[in-house]
Length: 82
Image (cartoon, rainbow, N blue to C red; front, side, top):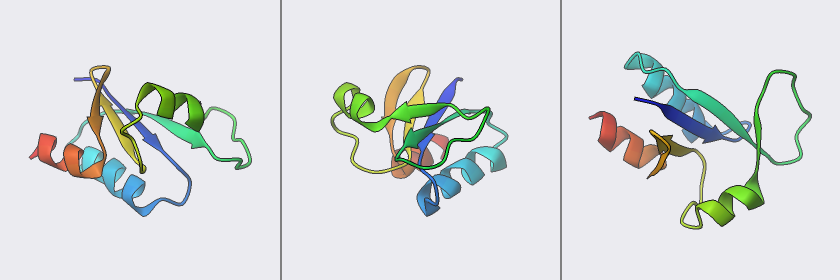
């Protein structure tokens, strides 16, 4: 199972999603939405406009891809992991 989580800085729901994945021992790749924050070396940033073009249904953070397919946000991740 391959999970990519798109998060944004200082996002409580993003932190909850990452904690949930860690609690289930599920590894994931994180990409951070570029919202004008100072950049950190080693972090992969995602342009928000490009993401919304690819996934117009995405309205909040986090957003999750499962095996390269759009899963949804925190609610859908919780449902998927049971």
